[in-house]
Length: 290
Image 1: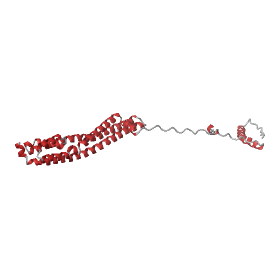
Image 2: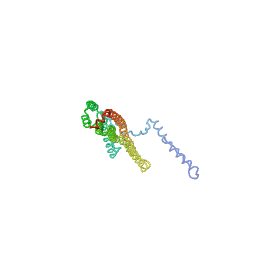
Image 3: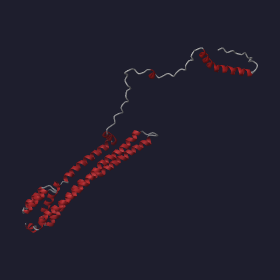
Image 4: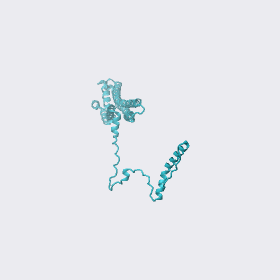
């Protein structure tokens, strides 16, 4: 398409100059549209707009048999509960709690063996001692009671040893031996109660220490404290409390159960010893003559 320009006298009027500039701008803006129309008129297709470049990965299809993308790497192996517990407690608390646990188990076994009926009130001794008394063999009865290591044997031997001074003296001697044996058993049991009371206090100490550590991290960590450091202090606080209670609860329960059992057996020992020695009340003058 041929555009014919009209010769205008440009000089002499600013209005004409402005008109010429405006006309030139309109012609320049319409020239691409005219070019497309002219190309369509002569059968030449207009150039298509350039398409954005496709990624190389999308342009090239994967080769046949290509391996799938590698799976995501597995997360790091989590520590076991035991390892996490030891790490949270710290070795000082681990050593203290292990020592308390071993002591508790040892005391429990020791007191359980001492609180047996065979240890405090053996039925065989009662039968043999009563048989000796029925046969009037008092010396053999004394030797039998003295050779027996049970609480009943010690009480009977102490009573027979003081029987020459009177029946009341014999009863007093038996009561003294019974109170002494009862005190020994109570003292041994009291260590279990001590562990039951001490373990929660140690756990409370760890709780306070762990919370102080967490608050220190918050105070010194700025606007964004480290979550791992906070979790470490909180886990120390919780695990020390947990382990302290796990030791204290069985200790207190075992102490009360064994104490009740010992008290009941000692009461039976006192009744059995008085019942066996009561028959010497009639023979007291004969024993004094001897």
